[in-house]
Amino acid sequence: MKNLSCSRSIYSELAELRDKNKLLRNSLLSKCPDCGQFRFRELFSNAASAITILNKKGEIIFANSAFATITSYDQDEIIGKLLNEILVSEGDTEGREYLHNLFCGPAGKANLSIAITDKNNDPHYIDMSVSNIAATCDTPENCICIMQDVTSEKEAEHRREELIEELMEVKELQEDNAAQLATLLHELDEKNYALELEIAERKKAEQKLKESEERFKNLSITDQLTGLFNRRHMLDVAEKEIFKSRNTGHPLSIMLMDVDDFKMFNDTYGHAAGDDILEAIGKIIKNNIRATDKAFRYGGEEFMVILPETNGLEAIKVAENIRIALAEYEYHPKEGSPIHKTISIGVAEFTNDESLEKVIKRADDNMYRCKIKGKNRVYFSCE
Image 1 (tube, rainbow, N blue to C red):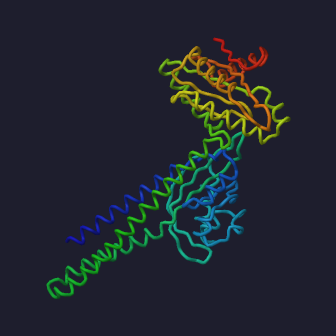
Image 2 (tube, rainbow, N blue to C red; image 1 turned 30 degrees about the vertical axis):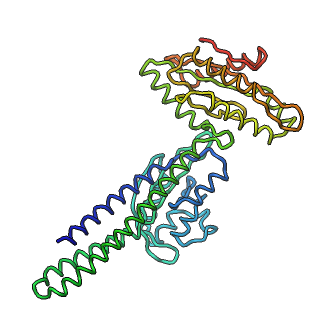
Image 3 (spheres, helix red, strand yellow; image 1 turned 90 degrees about the horizontal axis):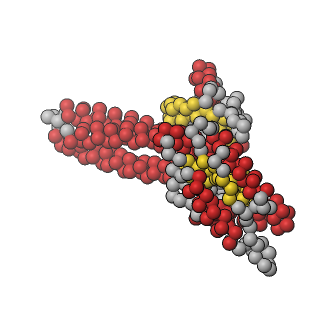
């Protein structure tokens, strides 16, 4: 009875780990990251899970090494192939059609478990998370598939069932051969111990997967040059803060800033020096905003800060801190006298009846007024 209880406990724990693994995979971001191409490919290529990105026809446009390992294909064979034809054998037209409709369907998410056959006709069981992403002005329509090979879990489940059947047979023979029973129970104990070790290794693998997914999430919302959040993430944060401000009646302000004479600086010192300045400005902004504020690279030499629970006058103080800190910063692009860069900042306070586009437009207009009035200043107006 003790060994039967232990087997049931292991069965429950493996089921719990399988469910948890599905949740971890489903938490992966379904939006294509707005980060540097090199970091993007590096993360995908080294991910523990098999990852493929499909175009709207269901053809593979990217696949990492983990996917090639599961399917036994070389990576140069995969690109351009239909994923449903790789995963499902030629004779299973119904299965191929089902996956094709899933990969090429409307935007959304789906999770499923399927049996596949690799290039060498070896069977595999995989858990798959499918995220269909609608086309935007910046990105085409894509489908991201994340797969985890759970063949070992299926085999372990089959082994558990065999062990339970073996245990029941042993119990029936208990009265006839006590010595044989003791030997078999000892063997079962050893097998259960091996399963416990397998569970421990599985937990370690899941932790590594979770850490990899967290790194991917951070990369997908971060501008790699400045270390600030990117514009795509800004749109998500801004809409949430506007919704909260409308419901609570609490103030919300934004500031839009543009580096003064940046094109002239680039033409004089080169784009590498320009990148260094943008990186330094990103650090200055982060060091001069509050913990509740969120800073973003809006595009090129433009930056934005969203300030929740903040009215226009309070936002001006934060903007002045940033402006002064940058004006005092010394940069040495070449030997000789240091260079000081300045920035123009437009501040706008959100009103309950306006959209995100409108409040950004007001901040942009105020920033333009700074340029007209001589640059290196902060401008705020109530309308």
